[in-house]
Length: 273
Ligand SMILES: [Mg+2]
Image (cartoon, rainbow, N blue to C red; front, side, top):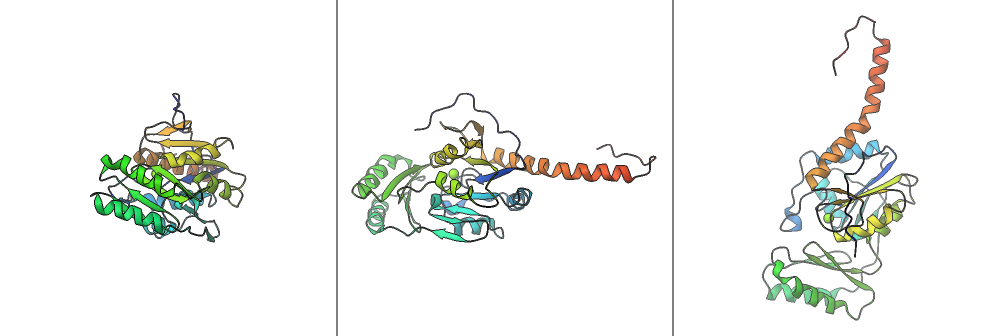
């Protein structure tokens, strides 16, 4: 389990040499009662597009969602992305790799039966995972955990992951940290400083990869974490990203201003800003 860090602080400004990895739900967008009910901040897509350009394309979404779902919410933007915690991964050239799906039929049957008996549970079938969401019935946490733990008990190829109000059965040995490591071996990520923002326990594997590489891990919201930096909410993430975009844009603007000043006649009035 991650340790709580008492001296967590705000992340430093994003460097031009960063490789930026962003979780989606709870980090870029607020959590909602169901995965489909999230609301995308109006300017988020153009903000991510600008940042991607400024970082030479070294910006990826690293999510538990399927890549199709991320694309749908960020359309028309199609960023490099890891979906289902890394089961799917689309690199910067647009090439997607996807692990083969394990046999999930017995798991799906158990989850569906649970959802039939108890109101408020939502079963989500992904390519290689089954997610059992209990956000609308938080009192059922133990019931869900017990059923899903037993469902995978005799199958070492599967692993149970516990996120915010969700239990997810997925292939063992897949996590966001491994996905980030894979991006870091490829252009345009390789050689850059990894920065990862995430809000959930499933993001800790990513934090554990970026910090030993000299990168920056940012926990979003409350709760214990390995991350040494923290932003309090998706709203704070948004504002930090806006500031990053503006700072990354500034040197060029200053350079342009300096040239304009040099070229301008001496008596030309200077702008106060
Ligand atoms: Mg999240």
